[in-house]
Length: 121
Image (cartoon, rainbow, N blue to C red; front, side, top):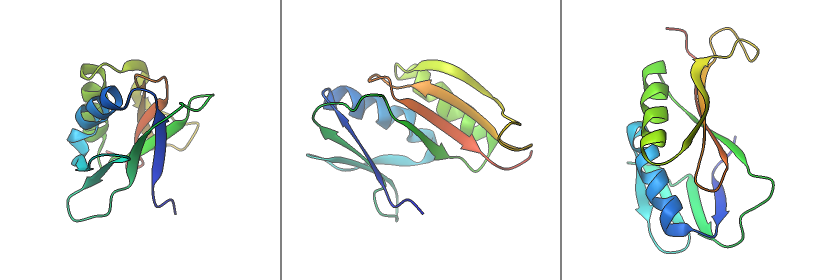
């Protein structure tokens, strides 16, 4: 199981503002400031970090679990409102499995940000 992930960016303030808005529907908030900036859900350890530095190439694909398809929709909408670019979705992706519902966005650094739900509804 993955404990946490850290993205490196040249634009820490821009990426922090983007992820603060994009992850808000899932209950994430900035829980540590400075370097790195940490995001987490109340009562749980931080699991997503942003660090100032050279951005990795190629961009990274990362996904956040959503307990419902409605949360996928809300997170995708929040990511677009925060300045993300809609890559595709939200929609079913039966090539993964019959209930896999997800949407993918590009963050301001070009990373592929996915929101995914494995539950049928």
